[in-house]
Length: 413
Image (cartoon, rainbow, N blue to C red; front, side, top):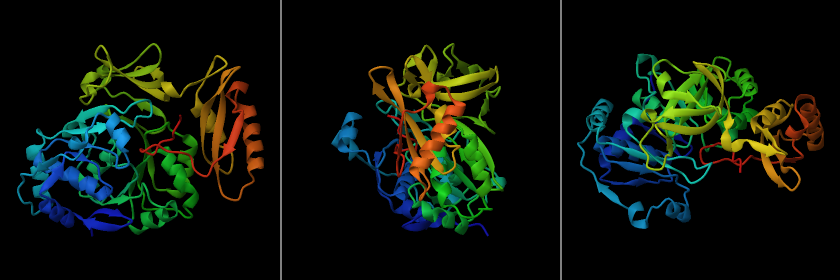
């Protein structure tokens, strides 16, 4: 029997019928959706879709100073909309109301801001839910919700689950030691997360989770070593690598690290002479703050062109580190360090140096109980056998957790 669960989180559970009741009871909606409860974020989003009102999504931990820097006043932040909506009895009626008002609806998202001030990007429902698939084939899916709900990746998971009336099991902020039990309890079939999230849960998974059919990785560089590790614990899962952004939405999907540019959008994708991925403005959400080069948006992503139809992601332009005149891709160094037994995750950064401009430092997270000095020796030995000398970190430190952004990605600054 299909579950009627809409949303589960550590503090409770809501069914689709309870969601409909909460939607009917809501009389006002804040223009700026900034809620502590993830359920309230999703409920308010649904209310706005039904009423056709334009809204702005904000991270719930934005400080007053950050909000001020975004140009949002206190009056704007507290602005409320008097709702005009019909009472809804069934999920089908809810979907009908969304379809009826979708042309009036619009949402503003903010980019993660990892490379500067967050940018405002507007999306209509058609562009936001571009990749959603709806059919009988998907009706029994159960999704682990492993993203921040106020950013594009989280919204994609939400819409895919919502339109197929699937349960959403929220694990993004959950105690990692509880996740295996929750995945098994609800027989989760689909997980979409960053590679960093997957690495963070692997040390806590003790057995195989057989219900999972699909794992999706996105938001960071693909990691073949991680894929092999995941298959040990999720033996029935197919793994996909996705490329998406707040500005353009979901564009590419791949098995492995080589993305194919479909014939449908081939004229809207270019790779510059500097190996940067360019996207035509016709694929973008609306934004006053995106800088275009003519009709093309410079993504800041460096890629390797395989042929006219295929490319491989290399790194963000801003992530490349200059060491004594040599450009170092930190992902290349991290990939080798992650192959060392006992290493859970690692981030390689730059530190200023008077002689070389920068040196590399590595922050390493390892399994409990291991000898840090022995792991450090093994890391250096491994790197010396694989990489040129300027790519080897001069300082290796061990951390309990690697600092993450609001979207669950590594903080590289």
